[in-house]
Image (cartoon, rainbow, N blue to C red; front, side):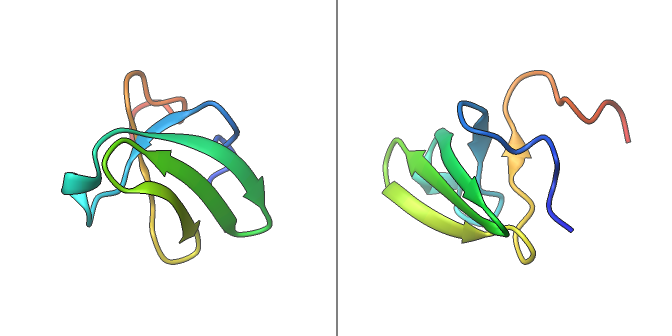
Length: 63
């Protein structure tokens, strides 16, 4: 199951690719999330395999 808080405009980081920098979600279609990263450009992420880290306040609350 993908995170229901992933939606266009949300700022994220890829936990396995810190050198990609800050990313902004562009689209979410099924389990595919397209993110535009500062240093890696647009990347399509399989949200069933990678849990992106929210930047700023985590909309999921404390875990």
